[in-house]
Structures are given as C-alpha cells and as structure tokens.
Image (cartoon, rainbow, N blue to C red):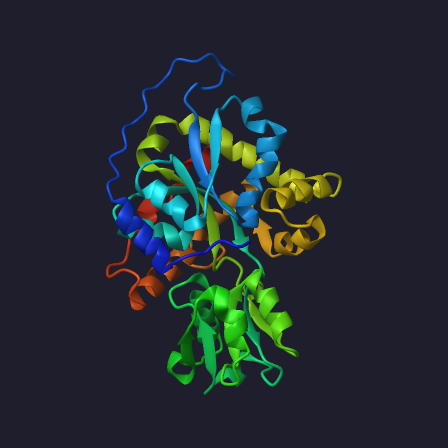
Length: 340
C-alpha cells in the first residue's frame, strides 16, 4: 500500500543499475494554439502512496485534457519508477524529498517543483504494552529497516526525546517482516509505515503507537520532481499540471466530493474505500496555497528546504551517500510563485 520511502538500498541499487546519465534531450518547442494538447505526452511516474494515488482523480476526471496539457501517468513499483527516472525514461516522478537526494547523489538532477503531501501519521513507532513513551526505549531493542524513511523517523524521535542512539539497540529487519519480528520477546518496538503497521498492531496484543509522523509534520515530504531539461523546455505546461493538482486536492477535501475521490483512489489500489480512509487521513495533502508556504525557504520542517536539509545530513551520517547534496539546487519555487 505505502511507498518505500527515502534512503532505501533498493533505491540506491535502482539508480546504480539504471545508469546515472542525465543528458536527456530537451524537447523541441511547439507552436500550439492556446488550449490545444501536445501530441507528445509528458510522462510522470507514480506509485502506491495516497498522496500520489490522488493523481488518479484528475486522470479519471479528464482534468489534464481540460487544462490543455497532454500527460501520461505510468504506474510503477516505487523503486522501479526511480530506476526509470534515473535512466531518463520519464519526464517526472512522484518521489519523497529524501529519495530525490539519493537520485541526485547518483548523478540525475531532478527538480522538486511541488509537494503533493507530507506524511501525517502513516509512519509510526509501535511499542509493546509495557512501553509507554520514547524514554522507555532506553536499553531496549527496536527493529527497523535501516536507511529507510522510518529509520529517519526513529532517529528524529530519539533526538527530540534527548535519547542517544547508542542508548537503543537497533535491529535491522526488512519492513515486510517487521510484524513477525515484533513478536520476538527481545524486540520492544518497531518503526514502520502503513499498512504493515496495522499488521504489527494486530499481531502483538496490547501494542500501541507511541510516536508517528503526525508528531513531526513536514519531516517526510512527497514531491513532484521533474527532469531539469524537460522543465526548462515546458515551464508553462508544468504550471498547468500544478493547477490541476490544486483542483484535485480541493476535490478530495470537499465533503461534497470526498467520497467519490476516495472511491477512485481505493479502486486504483484494490482496497475497500472505508479502509482506505485511514491512509488518506495519515497523508496531509498540499494545495497551491499550502505549497507556496512550504516552498518558502526556512530551516524548520514547515519548509521543504528545512526538511530536506535535515534528511541530507541524516543520509550522510548513515552512509546513504558520502557528500551532502546541494539541496537549494534541487528545489525551484518559481512556478508556484507565478501562479495565483
């Protein structure tokens, strides 16, 4: 259900095997009548995360054609979409801000032009019944897939609680195996995302969430990231895509149309709409107005800059890549600023 978010080894491997060349040819400009649709579609990779499945609403409603832009969305497993983008087989990708840094470290420069959402509860730390707070984790074993986004969540949570990483024993485990690992008597807690989190909660009686991404809004942003050369040649079309996104978020959030939007999204991933509501609730979608605030430079997590600075340092300290990436060079607020 949920994407493999930032920093994964599978992402690094995808980049390695796809090649790191970013010399995509700039598409030839076309002289089109206003409101006409390009014959050559813009290709965008998207995968199974509510903030990206939301695009399905705009696709099925025909809003891209209505806006005069020809877009082809291609459905991928998350790591495969990164591989395709790194190999210049896509013009854009739905990707976490942290993973875009991993892509950049491999040599492909993708520009973050908009954030679809930030995680607001879908990433969690789950503890057994005798653990009631982060402080109770001192001296205990916590299982997490090292290098993934919930390792970042755990690290940030421990920092906030002023607990040294050395005070907690990290047990590296594959995310999809964490419900079984959690059942081991020597594991006190796990850091994991939904829906695996729900599986773990059901597997271990009395377990509970003691921290989530809702406690740290803006730690994990999800973005629309565009190939740099394509962006320079198709700026106006990307602005239209951002406007369609704004319309999509408003449709999902409007009580009058919310149920219809949830049905479309749930059908895309084969989940019952009632069950899918939980995942939408854990995903804070960002419309145009919210994006303008998010793309204002700052050092806090209310800014995509501050969030990405934070994950950049985490990546280096945990050996995801050796040298900090140029965050400012991967974020462009210009298109948002030009829209009303």
